[in-house]
Length: 190
Ligand SMILES: [Fe+2]
Image 1 (spheres, helix red, strand yellow):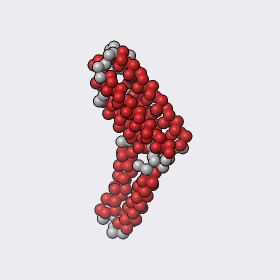
Image 2 (cartoon, rainbow, N blue to C red):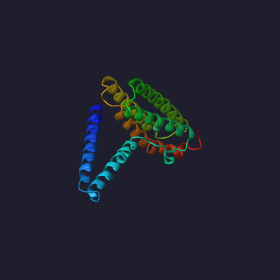
Image 3 (cartoon, rainbow, N blue to C red):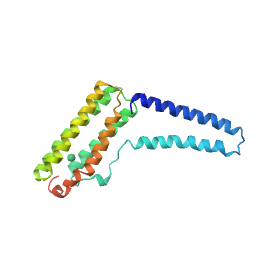
Image 4 (tube, protein in one colour):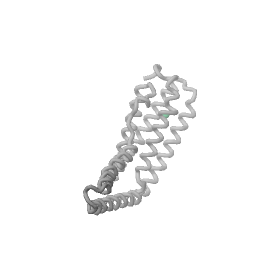
């Protein structure tokens, strides 16, 4: 969502809440026993709850089912998910650009460090699908670099797009590609 789109959606939300408040006041003119204003109050209460739930879907929480059975890799994945959440928070709360840059740099550096470690362990175990797995890592780094370059050129492009891409990619990669090596590597490497 771009900054402009976010501004428009906030404006729509404000107009909606204001409209509801006016309708509630008018509704009470029909009498306190009339159901309309009470229904509108319920709608007014539910809107921020739905809004918060939608925001929460942008963040990611570690699940035990994400484990690949190797402690060092699980630790890396938890750290990466934590950094993605930090990026999402920074984007959502409009933190200053320098903080976003710092988190982005940490994310890129740690992702590269993690891929190198994971690829080293796969090699150590003669993992048969090594080449295809490494290719996925390379494609991901290319895609993220492209997003980040675009963001740096045009700051109005929100960083939330990058955070959502990273979250989706990492969760899918862990639960798909990474977990395929578990039977070949679990118990052989730490
Ligand atoms: Fe991987």
